[in-house]
Image 1 (cartoon, rainbow, N blue to C red):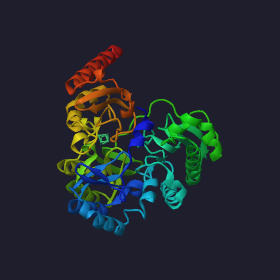
Image 2: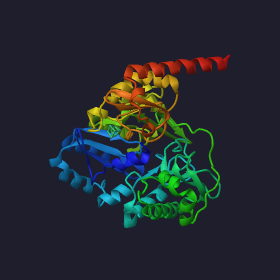
Image 3: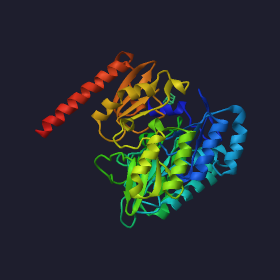
Image 4: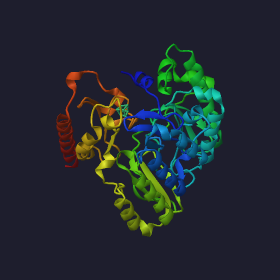
Amino acid sequence: MTRETILRKGWCPSARRPMQAKDGLLMRLRISGGVVSAATLRWLAQAGRAHGNGVFNLTTRGNLQIRGVRKECLPYLMQALEAVGLIDEDAAAEAVRNVLVSPLAGLDGRDDVSSAAKALESALAANKDFHALPGKFGFLIDDGSALSLGPVPADIRFDWIGGKQSFAIGIGGHANEAIFLGLCGGDDIPDIAARLAGAFLRLASQMAEPPRRMRGLIESCGAGAIARIAGLRPGPPQKSGTIEEPCAVGLLRFNEIYCFGVAAAFGCLDANMLDAAARAAEIFGTGEIRLTPWRALIVPFVHAEEAGAIRAYFAAQGFIVDRGDARLAIAACGGASTCDRGTTDTRSDALALMFFARSLCMTGVALHVSGCAKGCARQAATPFTLVAHAGHYDLVVDGAAFDAGTNDANRLNVAAARETLEAMARTAGQRSELERQ
Ligand code: SF4
């Protein structure tokens, strides 16, 4: 099954267009720039308790989801979200505002891209032509921060590379696989993104089966055709080598600014954790929290000498505070416990395998256990991905969930998956031992 086929079957929830899940309605909030105040976070915690089941998710696009919303509460919750400015005018404007910007925009990074990101969001929401973009079609702006968005895939992306025209324009993937279409300044980003989105819509509309992602369009008609319509030209790749997924956990220093990052296992938080994060931001920071695409929250402007107290505080509230925590090696959707398409308890299997996963790959997410080929928990390629089929798994190496095979005979149960990962870990250990000698 191709990625296009799988995406055609699915759609993304939003606040105006919640999705029915096993535990109730799921609302996804697109918080502009991922910047949220302690007061707003506290408000959300209370709203989640009052109208939902008090559970929240941090997504790989830096969005926050409210889970378990009861149907009868939906109108009140929408009204309340409107009053605090967390919901768009209509569902289409909300869906199209899929802009991921560096989580520390304005604090770290080589260029402050906050205003370019806001201008792009406004342009996408205001121009109804763009509302025809497919649900998952996403934009990304990386400001050159140490917390690089390079490994995060996007349909249209701008990566800081330095110089006068400091952003590399790319389409269709993460920073290393995207097709390079030239350079631009930060102020040009909204206009160029709009031209590329327009080119996508024009070319896709001429196809019998319009692709849902830029990568699909590139495969159908080539990057040259897209670039020509947008007034750009493809060029040689700008980046090479692997880009490591950054770890946003622990005390982080950016120039003279200290921040503290904490993660949540599987991106799952309860209302008490949101309250705790809000309180920490007020006690240790300036009352501001940044949401990241790595299932972590960052409290900016902390004091380095308080790192021990901050760590202890967050650890007591159930957050991951240690970069060596093996839970950072795994990603998994809720599987059978939260989703109708899920057939397997993906999270408990992921927890059972996390130490093997970490020994195979020392940084970033090493193992993605997906409830099905849709791969909701992670779109990016992962060293190991297990795709569930009623308690058995397809193993994908260096790929994504939608790369899973269709041969039932090759499927592994969790014990066999564990043995396979264990054997791979042993071989990798022997190889590095030989290399050391
Ligand atoms: S990946 Fe997981 S959450 Fe997404 S549709 Fe499949 S089972 Fe459901």
